[in-house]
Image 1 (tube, one colour):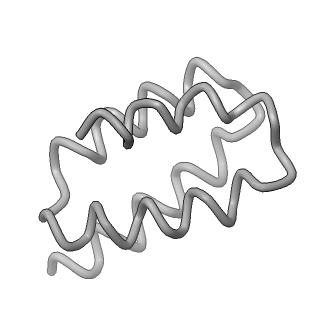
Image 2: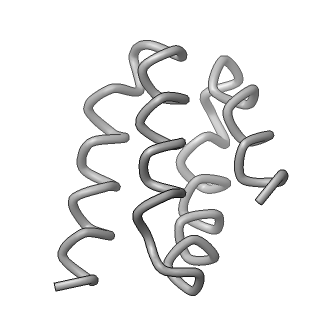
Length: 66
């Protein structure tokens, strides 16, 4: 079940990546819901996903504060 939540989170983040505010909001929700090791995996995925999306770099600060 937990793995399904991780995959769902990635799907949602991909869909809302057009809007920085939505992306940050959904990322905050994900950080509250996911298990610690999943947050680590999400951090790795986020760095790869946002590599060519400089407008989303602001949201990476949320992960670094965890």
